Every structure is written in structure tokens, then in C-alpha cells.
Image (cartoon, rainbow, N blue to C red; front, top):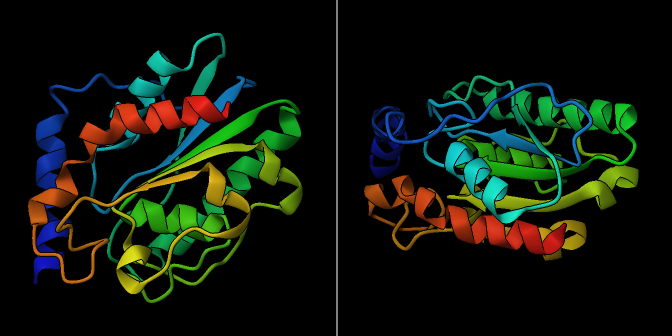
Length: 213
């Protein structure tokens, strides 16, 4: 019940945030230096995601200087359907692969919140199957492109509640925020509001990404 309340609250809290957050431009990225690929949470409104994607993109623009940034909103339902995360997983891999081919020097920052973290997990080869709003892996970023993923920024990651985390190739380039008591990423967590407060981690996430580019 806490998890259902948490997911349902995303649409309400996200909508309330829209009036206070600047909306970054979202597009199929041109050949910028860095393309920020953001997968929003379940039912989360906003350009890249009102709770995480939008504030993180704004923070990245402040922290990363001397490089051009573009953004891409992952095209997927972000709902409770059984194939939602899988659709996002496929879209992330297709987008990164096509951008990498079109822009040989472009690098990527992957951002995922809640279900969007499942999407990113799958895309880098860490299965979210069995986690809340997770799915089996349907595609992974090709190994040849892995060095071009500069940073992976995850928030309220559901795989953590089932004892998994990002390991292997991307581990040193990943920061994974889980607020104390967040029932989506902490097994037994009971603080629904904790899942809605990750905007406060935007600066820390952006600073981490800046250190990797």
C-alpha cells in the first residue's frame, strides 16, 4: 500500500513543482558535447521530469562549463503497464546508439528516477526484473559505446529494494541516491514523502557528473 501511495503521489507532487522549476529544452539532441538522457518516474510530469530530470538538468548546466549540453526525454509510458520500463529501455538504447553514430564525439549522461532508474539500469545491463515497476532487459548500450557514457545518475532506484545495485563497467561512473525510508528503494521503508524529495540532490548529482566529464 505504501508503494502504491508513493507512485500515485508522483503525479500530484510533480504537478505542484512545475510552477517553480525552469523547464529545459528537450529535443532529439543535436551534436552537443554532452547529451543528457533522462527517464522520468511513474506518472511524473515535467519536461524531463519535474521532481528529478528538470532540476538535475538545470544543475548540470551550472556545474559543467565550457561544454555544450542537450537533453532528451526518454519516450516511454512511465505508467504501471507491464511493458512500460521495457519500452523505455529500448528507447534509451536506440537513442544513444543513433546519437553516437551521428555525433562521433558526443558523450552521454544518463538520468533515471524511480521507474526511470529501472529503465537506465536495464539499458546498462543491470536487470530490474522483479523490482517495483521493473522489467526484464530488452536491450543494452553496446559495449563499444560504454566509454562514451560519462555518468549515470539514479534516484529512488527500485532495484536497491531487492538487493541489487549497479556493478561492473558503469559502477565507478554511477551515483545512486536512496533517501532514508523511501519505500521504492529501501526494503521496508515507510516514508512515502522521502521518494518525492530528490530534487534536493540535484546539485550533488551534477557535481558528480561534472567530475566525470
